[in-house]
Image (cartoon, rainbow, N blue to C red; front, side, top):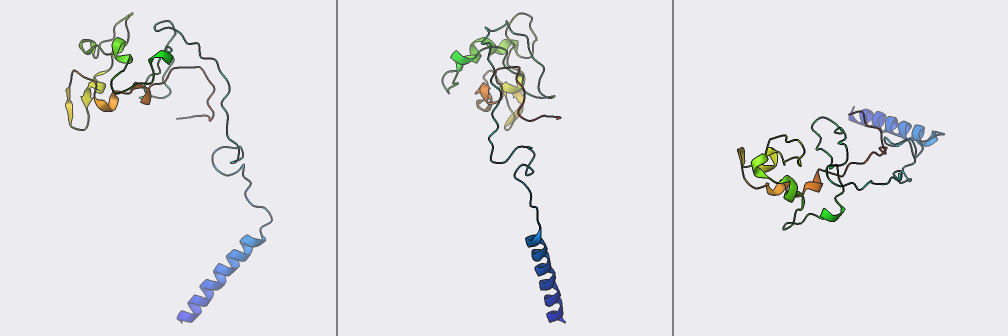
Length: 154
C-alpha cells in the first residue's frame, strides 16, 4: 500500500514538473512585484528644485497620512547633519515651556511625546528631548511638492 501511495505521489510531482517545463510563456520581468516596470530597472525620481525658503515663509503642506510626522517647511541644509552634541532644530523648536501650545507666529514647539520615554516612563514628561527622538531628520523631512514614485492609497 505504501509503495502505491509513493508511486502515485511521485507520478503527480513528475507530471507537475513536466507541465511547468512545457509552458510556452513564463512570467516576464515586468510582471513580477508591485511595479509595472522591469525588475532590472531602477526608478529615478523626477527632478525638482527645492525652494530653500527661510523658516516661516513657506505654506505648510498636509501630512501624507493621519499620524504621519509633519514635514519641515523650511530649508535645513545648514542645520544638518544632526549630531549627538549639536541639534540646530532645538534652538527654535526646543522650548520646553511651550510644549503642547500652539503659538501663532512662532516656531512650532516640539510635542510632549518627544519629551516622554515611552519605554520606561510613559506617563512622565521630562525637560529634555528623549534620545530616541533627538535626531529630527529620522522622521521629519523638508517638504517638497514632488510626484511620488509609486501611487499611495493609504
